[in-house]
Length: 133
Image (tube, rainbow, N blue to C red; front, side):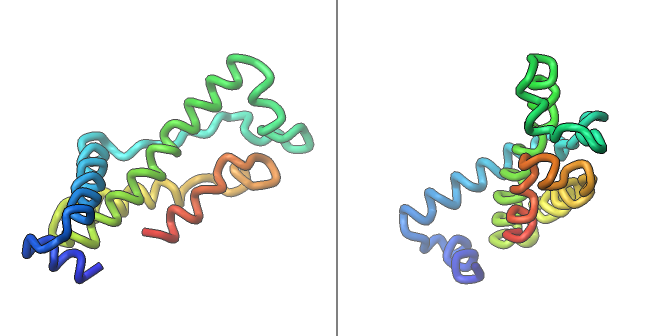
């Protein structure tokens, strides 16, 4: 990563690498333009002793819409953490690190009981996202 950052600063990146870094920077800048997404879990995400969320949400339009309202910020966070953490490694003095940390804090704050793998598989991307940053 240090060599990539040095080559970028020196302007000696090959065309493909430069294009990829520029694309990731554009995605990171898009993330920075908005506040860190907040994940709001539905009150009935976990029904103790009841059916799991993954069996319930596809059952009707309202549940599916609530599911999408929960998942959209989560998906945005997955991308935002990846691209802002990458750019923070390339440009440590830039604005990316603070945003990446705030996005990771949002992911780390998700209720573990309600989002457990036994109840829903929708959050299985959280740990890999946190581990790559």
